Image 1: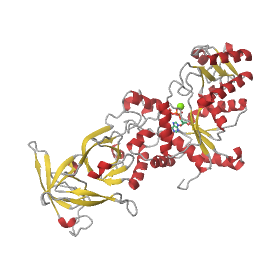
Image 2 (image 1 turned 135 degrees about the horizontal axis):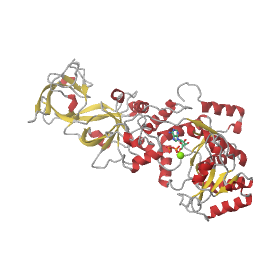
Image 3 (image 1 turned 45 degrees about the vertical axis):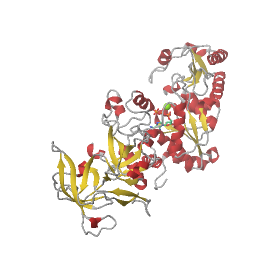
Amino acid sequence: MSEERSLHFLEEIIEADLKKGTHDGRVLTRFPPEPNGYLHIGHAKSICLNFGLAQQYGGKTNLRFDDTNPVTEETEYVESIKKDVKWLGFDWAQELYTSDYFDQLYAFAVTLIKKDLAYVDDSTAEEIAAGKGTPTVPGTPSVYRSRSIEENLQLFEEMKAGKYPDGAKVLRAKIDLAAPNMHLRDPLMYRIKHATHHRTGDAWCIYPMYDFAHGQSDAIEKITHSICTLEFIPHRALYDWFIEKLEIFPAKQYEFARLNIDYAVMSKRKLLQLVNEKFVNGWDDPRMLTISGLRRRGYTPASIRNFCDKIGVAKRENLIEMSLLEFCIREDLNKTAWRRMAVLDPIKLVITNYPDGQEELLHGENNPEVEGGDGSRSIPFSKELWIEREDFKEEAEKKYFRLAPGLSVRLKNAYIVTCTGFKTDDFGNVTEVHCEYIPESKSGNDTSGLHVKGTIHWVSVAHAKTAEVRLYDRLFQAEDPSNEDGDFKEYINPNSLQVLSKAYIEPDLATAELGRGYQFIRKGYFTLDTDTTAENLVFNRTVTLKDNWAKKA
Ligand code: ATP
Ligand code: MG
């Protein structure tokens, strides 16, 4: 933690535990993703919190795949999750799987049956739901609730042996059908599911429910602080009940507010729909707030960690502004991105008094923000340049400091030029801008004594490389698409991707590296996209230089 700030509630809890000597001063957290999708920025918050707290207090963090649902889970997701956690900059103490505990969890269930604290129920899902009552009306016991311990043991074993079809029976905890907390009204512990599991194959046809797997896994690993999101508050009593009745390690659950970001959706279920229904090009589409999407877009691990640090740890749900995330990446890239020139919407500039066939190599700093510099590159200059169409006007208006007949600008890293005229086609569209340069005004050695207000970027026509450039806008038009009427997909921004198929870039960018940030001067921060091939360079705009969303909204 760099800035001074007061402790957040989880830090207070841990410090109090350390003071009391709870768990012998040990701190062990876990990050427990279900491998049913790619990680998103919300998970990054949980990762930074779990790993961050452990680092802060000399503890450790386990990576535990919560893989109790064979139908939705896949090895592809496991691999992507490991990659993303590492990329964010964290190392786990142990890589664990809830499925590794299936034998132990089964034994725990048998223990509860033997204590007459669990029973096999043959009721249908509807009957069970109806029997739970409502928050104000107590539930009614199922006729199977009074089964003998022996019968329960036998039936549970038969469930495990595969004697019954899906849904025929469940194992339920015997707690209290009148409990004000609905989660305590004889919750399910096991269900029958004849499905192949990505790790245990067909070894099991009964699978533990989240509530019977999570706390027990925490106890098996001796997790000291089990941190989850607010929706699990009502589950806490059950978490504690199982641990108490099983007399196992007293792990404790603590809840914080999940991260929500405006103009975005965050749940894996919704992200999966966007992928499957082809609203985006895969989990790592640069418009997605997945870790892989952000990486491809050009976000750095440091910017994401910094963002998670800045938003803090809340106990109440809120909506964080996307502009804060963008602020964090701008701040980081300003310090690290190499400055380059690229013309996205080109028009030709001819320097009429520059000798035909002459070429110069000009000097350009990689990053003037870095103290002592960050190296430099040479930029070829010649008589014909590409400039942005918007940097020329046929007639200058007040306070216009770029090119127009009679006006002068500095060409970045090069000379001052004065516009002398332009050419149009038969339809009156400007096809070429003409200017004259001042030889004494060369950047770094300017003896002209002239001062101009505007500086524009350019690329030499003879030396330019071409690239495809992808510009992104927010994926949703509604501030909180999940809380609007109808389906969240109705609020997708139809203009979230703009592809410029032929931008001109300075030749040095032909050797751009994946994972490196580049500032295209005046145009934003960009990074090479993984779609790049030897023939076709593709750049993503990570973020504009300024927050221009604020103006639009
Ligand atoms: P989703 O609803 O997106 O599928 P989840 O909670 O089901 O999320 P898990 O894989 O079960 O996803 O989550 C792993 C961990 O990440 C959990 O501890 C969960 O609480 C945490 N987490 C998930 N989403 C967020 C979020 N938006 N903000 C903070 N933590 C989150
Ligand atoms: Mg989940």
